[in-house]
Amino acid sequence: MIMRGHYLLFAALLVAGCATQRRAAVMTAPPREEEPLVHAAKPTRTVETRYEIRAYRDARDPSVRHEPHAVYRSTRVPARVETLETAPRTEFAPVSFAPLPDSVELGAELATQRQITGELRAIQSSIASVEQRAEAQYSSLVNQTAETIKLRRQLEDERARVQELEVRLRNDAVPLGAATAPTAAAKTADARW
Image (cartoon, rainbow, N blue to C red; front, top):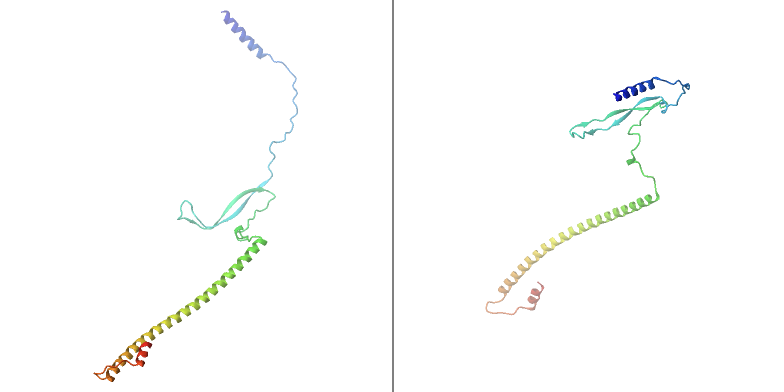
């Protein structure tokens, strides 16, 4: 029981301590205007920008083709900007078509290339003329060869006829019983052919 008394005494002290309040003079400062951590947003407005899209095939389905069309994008801009005009695609040449600035090295290289190209063209024309002359000469040689073969055949035919004729003449001129030696003229005629 003694313990029970201690508990009661402790609870009474605890409650009594909370119940007493000290009076203190508290001065409250007038509320000051604090600067906001984030500045107030400047006035803005929304502007639509038009973009031209070329025709393209759908990546998911290659059988689907999208026609050229425009796409609009809303952009929030400061109020002082009146318009966001986009230039048409055809107004400026793309960078890939823009010519390079002139340079001395490039000019020298181009001049060398032009000279080489001119020399190559001259060589090609001379080769073409030589080829034409060679073809003409070849055709004349073929014609001459054909004529030579024709003349050789005629000559061989004539030689055969002459030999036949000489044989007949010898047989007719020489009596049957007398065999004479061939004359010097006959020997030279045979040697010629």
